[in-house]
Length: 198
Image 1: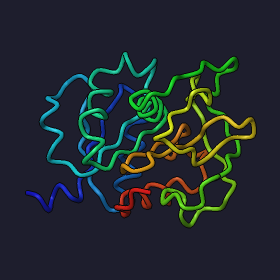
Image 2: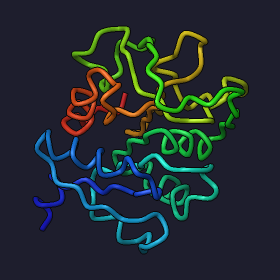
Image 3: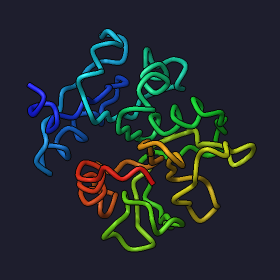
Image 4: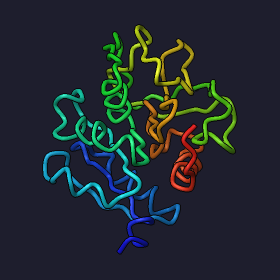
């Protein structure tokens, strides 16, 4: 049972249409995915999984079932990767705030620049990557938590990826599973194969 779960990723589905595109990407790199809706599980059952992916979703983290509780409970012991809403939830748990964009980014490809060359998520990726964006909110640069580190930014310096300084917790604002995103499969493979925390 334990060996099976090491190759099985728990995907917390925040009621998003992109969730199964992420599952497909996970499958492509040789892992299985178990998908749980964010309000349809017992928090204790998360314990058996080593890797947890937090899906995109509508709204804000407070409206997303047990999403914030999963991060609060399991960030110290699990590998967590947040996508879009998932990244925003990570930031909020560690003291960050969100900023509503004046112009939503829905189905738009923009370049992002990797600003942390040591971030395992971006190994084997170029410094500038075109990514698919589908969001109205970003993690605010103001009062950014000292325990988090920005790993990628867009051309307006908005936060496009982050990680925790000491925990195996990271996120991206863009969608690695989108056809608009370059190197999305590489990023997923990097996360799934890496146990590096910094």
